[in-house]
Image 1: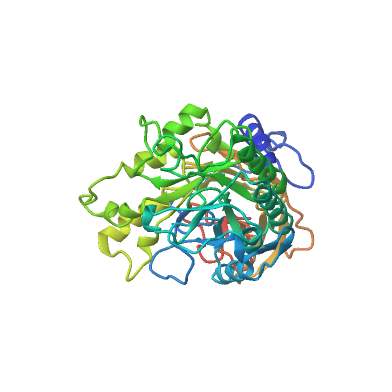
Image 2: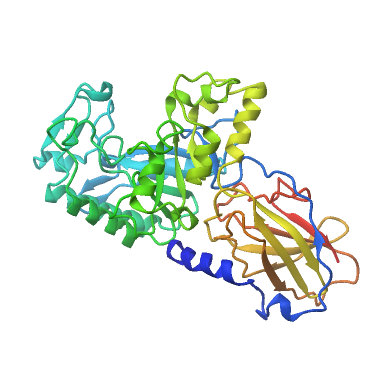
Length: 452
């Protein structure tokens, strides 16, 4: 799916897509019914695979469709090729049980938490380094990432993770993790510049880890912490974990400047961008006026990164935000990622056509299926039609994409029917994708296109 998205983007920008049994372009049916506009209204802030998210838990204080968690590698890896997935499964199932998709990261070294290094590697004599930074005071340790035994362990783990979980509907995105403090692919200040020692693995090791991720995952989207020449050609997005704090150029270590320097400013068109609002500003950024002592313009950060999701746990803790502050935060969450709207629909006895525009800042990346249905006068769905429609890659700011499908109405009783459409969230009980239209049913996900 991730590899196919690049081709999909190219096709969508050049062609009018057609779906259905016949696969005939809509332009070949000049006698089709007249196009009728559908009214726009903002889509909900908890549309799937976008918006703000909390650390995993049952929160009712802010709209969201995803939850975040960390997990130490030692909780699942017990030997060179031995894995115990119970703890991981428990997290995925708890999040899915709330109708949400999970975003996560495995780590070896999380400052202030006990080590995430598998015990069998420690028993085998893997070299580790204590450190006092980030309030750690020796609780966690930084491993020798160049040790061949550790490198082999990480490659085996990534392979096993992909074999078992690639395309799992409970998972929204995976951040690569595993390397560096918090799994963020840095060991600052032990970087060879700030401190003479450089604890990061060599480029050859980083390349091996990246290549193994690329080989192991085809459907689930992956995000790396920093753009680099090693991950530039790969089907990997990025996450900015100091969002609206160290995001905007021209400072060399800021996220967008790194995108510019590595030549990947357009990668968002095919690969997702996510991250975390810097913890210090997660609450104060929505005050009026902004009360943070240091921050960057949030709207500009969204515009330049094309981010789809952000961890913003402060919006979910305690009683959450209230009043105008809550409304500003909801609007900020809604501004992330895609906002698909059906601008027009044309309905006939045997054909349904729609024009879909994206008013957001990023595509809808997931290749979820789209279906049509006929609803009778009693509100009952009496016929369904699955389509070949592909909404992935519909780019923001471009002319609406035309999609058309033949429908087989044979056997339906004569009468007037409402024609509805929806995108199928593959997660059972998952939050449905809602279009930015006044005729959208926000509970069921069905969008009414008109009557026929």
